[in-house]
Image: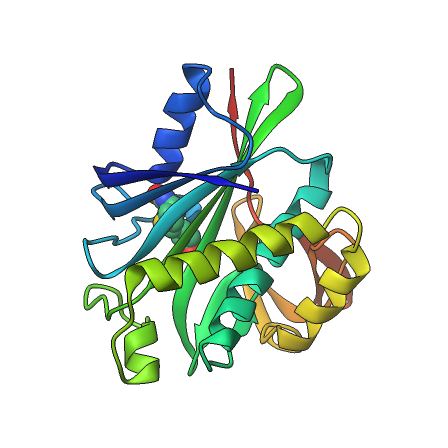
Length: 237
Ligand code: BTN
């Protein structure tokens, strides 16, 4: 179950969720859907282009009993939910760890997971999803649903499909971790590839070999094993 808050324009749906939370108005299962964002946020502090009419930009705020590193599984499950929605539209998508959704080797959708803490207690997860409906020319290496399908789509139709699928997929994580991991593994383009990452300021290179049971990426760096996790941005009240 979810309820939708519609906004014409906002800085970022993630920030709007945090404002509702601080005002004690955030309800479990709320989706904040904005037609455009002036300060859309991507992972690693990057800007996320979110102009009006060009995509679906929303945040799903929910509670979970998962804790610690297992919260990573939510990233994977959200990406799988997007894959399912795209499959319903006739598109075969793949995943780049942790949660980039890829069509024809280009990114069509990104996922950003943030956690809100009340002291030491996890209060809410904020799952932000940005799906390009039309091409975003400012972002090289990206694609859009309309480019891949060669036709136009209604925002309402895609939003409903996407939200139903993502909410359903998130709901499965707590009981079906193994299913999430094995489905993800089959669609993951990162496994078997060379990856580079930073550890304590040093750039390291290695080969991605497996997923860990909590959704981390196991990397072989010249015979030494490292486990990478998607950064979880935390906000404490
Ligand atoms: C990524 O870097 O791949 C994650 C992109 C997440 C973008 C979405 S759009 C809706 C929500 N609000 C934001 O400001 N960001 C997320």
